[in-house]
Image 1: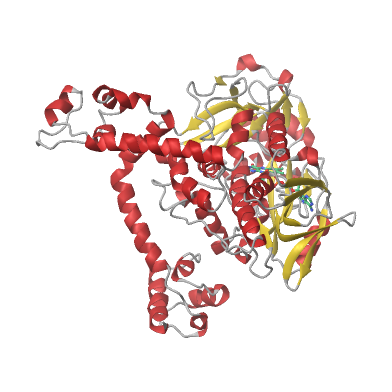
Image 2: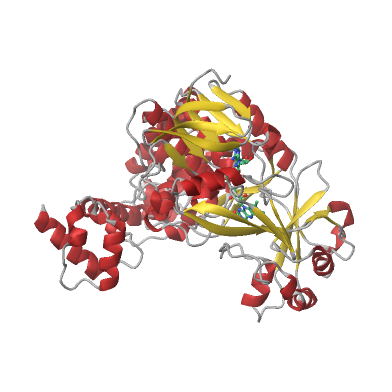
Amino acid sequence: MFHVKHDVVVVGAGHAGCEAAAASARLGARTALVTLSAEAIGRLSCNPAMGGIGKGHLVREVDAMDGIIGRISDLSGIQFRLLNRSRGPAVRGPRAQIDRAAYASAMQAELAGSPGLDIVEGEVEDLIVDAGRVRGVVLRDGRRIDAGAVVLTTGTFLGGVIHLGDRTWPAGRMGEAAATALSTRLGALGLPLKRLKTGTPPRLAARSIDWAALPGQPGDDDPVMLSAMSDSPALEQRPCHISGTNAATHEIIRANLGRSALFGGGITGVGPRYCPSIEDKVVRFADRDGHQVFLEPEGLTSDLIYPNGISTSLPEDVQVAFVRTMAGCARAEIVQPGYAIEYDAVDARALSPSLELRALPGLFLAGQINGTTGYEEAAGQGLLAGLNAARLAGDGEPVTMDRSTSYIGVMVDDLVTNGADEPYRMFTSRAENRLALRADNATERLTPWADAVGLVGPARRAHHRTAVEAKAGADATLRALAVSPTEASEAGISVNRDGRRRDGYALLAHPDGGWHVLDRLRPELRALPRDVRDSIEADALYRTYTDRQRSVAEETRAADSLPIPSSLAETPIPGLSNELRQKLQARRPATIGEARRISGMTPAGLALIAAHARRAI
Ligand code: FAD
């Protein structure tokens, strides 16, 4: 295999790497996926779940571009819930509880069946750099793989160090070796590295928990799948259960804070503010005497339970003591202790929006290595990096994703513009345009674009075409409806007697309206697939806002494209603060859009820069 010259080498087979390799292979690039252990391909490092609010949006976007994370999750899901169901469609996020073993084996089967994709077991220790461009990788045992482009997705493995109480040792995850040589090499190549950290809770033995004492939480009766290509769950469904910490738990944690790696000063890296450890929560929310803990099954045949909400780096004896104060857990056995991990990440400001290193062409980075946390964030970047690596290897131009049309675009733009001072995770509030960036319309937003760049296969294309035709037919029917106020009130909708006729969208968006009304008026609409109905309903609800947002986005895009000559950073701009002048010099934005996204940029500062840029043209 090593005599075959590959177009693309992807290093790492976590969520970024699997998606990058699959995308690259879909483009027809001969792709090598190199990973430390083939058995660990697709391993979920932390919680056995995929999706959620913001994260579910990312999964749907990857899926809309014929990515694999959504389909694999549906094949291995043992509970499906649409989060935020009672709130507006824009912030509803599909989530699945995953059978960990089923996920990894479905992912391994998917990659093994991908034409043009070779799996290589080994540790990448070095990059081949020729005339300032990355041309391949060297493995620890001396093998070398030449390639037109390389994608690094090394997760928590680069310079990884585990912390458990006062014990520390190098590792990429519990039981897996760290990638230390590559980290040293990246530092020597001048990549801007920094330390980040994250943590995971202990795993409990299911048989040791008193389930009768705990309320159950089943999945939805009408499961919403993560992939547009799936109809229903493939596996038997299971409930989660709800336990929680209490005053006694917090007392034990408080008494032992000095023994926590997180609080004992052993860790210098910055942790995820939005996934805090239980030590963090007890200190930061000192007035609360309890936090909910979901006991999540790790799989249908696994005896392990993942207690979501108590990630920790306290010593094992303290973990046992505090877990046993929780409801239903008086006799809980810990099978694997929780721990914290510290690792190297690259400052993503060194990347271009195609995820290629500006200073080292041919090298793309995706996932945790860019300072993000989460499987879904990793997969979104992996797809974009794999796509661009394959394009570069084929001498194509880079492509980028826009923040006004995708959460992936928002994430990449946030990362390359501002970097990540702490592990970055997706929230719907990060998108200015969030009413238009919904999980339900990801295919409409992205499948045509992905098809145009070569990411979409025939099955997905046919599926999308059918959905588009169904929606267009329904759209014509809804627009053609012209219901008078009298007809509306006969249908149970009270509207003003203004003589105005309402179309189908107005009836859908009306508080008394909905599909039950439309189905009576136009029975042929009953045959529409559920995802098409959901998407039309959301369109109806947000029609006015999305039209306004679209025109604001267009205006902003036009203003953002104004180029900034590089000489402007050195030109005195009267009225511009010292802080902004320094940021301008350090970042040298190429356009007003890039300048606008510099953290701390003010509207007044931007107006001054734009005025000078315009004058310089
Ligand atoms: P990973 O899934 O880590 O995959 C990295 C891959 O690279 C592995 O396959 C590894 O074998 C391979 N690799 C590394 N170096 C080399 C090399 N030199 N040569 C060959 N192969 C190599 N996310 C959350 O959202 N919330 C959490 O609370 C959370 N907690 C976490 C706790 C822990 C302890 C860990 C380890 C992770 C946690 N995560 C959490 C993060 C989540 O697991 C990652 O964000 C996600 O897995 C990142 O995906 P990735 O593809 O970037 O990397």
